[in-house]
Length: 73
Image 1 (spheres, rainbow, N blue to C red):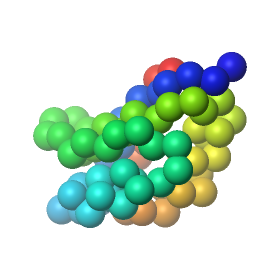
Image 2 (cartoon, rainbow, N blue to C red):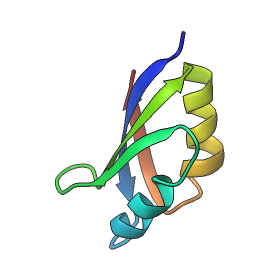
Image 3 (cartoon, helix red, strand yellow):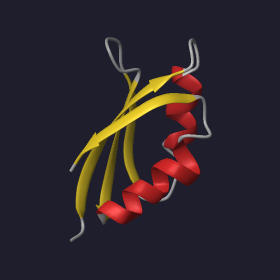
Image 4 (cartoon, one colour):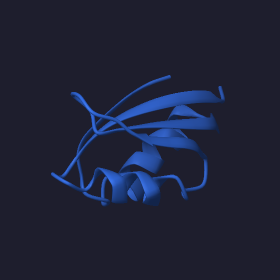
């Protein structure tokens, strides 16, 4: 089933702005926002299956200064 997901990312120290800008350009990403608190960046995806989101995380997001990622669909 396709739908929207929210990814909660923890970035390498002082990399959240760069990460947010880079992720916002990825296919399937609707919005990427830098935040303060437990997480450094929140990403909204649209029209993606759970498998597509997992693939996005593993192949495109984790290599970009990400130390931890969790999501809810």
